[in-house]
Image 1 (spheres, rainbow, N blue to C red):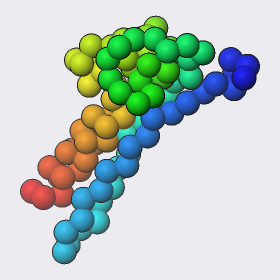
Image 2 (tube, rainbow, N blue to C red):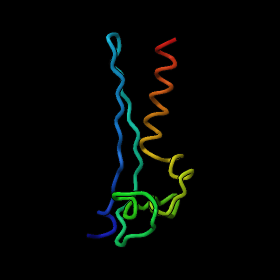
Image 3 (cartoon, rainbow, N blue to C red):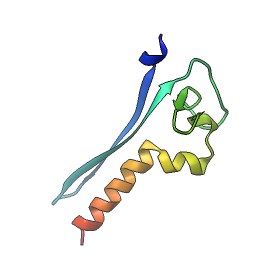
Image 4 (cartoon, rainbow, N blue to C red):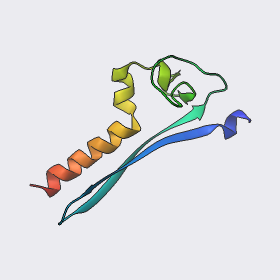
Length: 88
């Protein structure tokens, strides 16, 4: 597959539902599917998911680096901000 067609996106959708509210948000990070497995951290597709602005795959990033750009972390931070405002 040519490089320009190897794009990928990790995406997470997080919801909060109670008797009064139905809220959702999402987090995502765009990357490229590597042609080789690189790195030994993480799991699943991490060794194949290359993050261009970091110059590394998810499996090469430290936990701190990954948490700062993680699709899950982004989604949860967005939901946290929404909940703080809604539940005041």
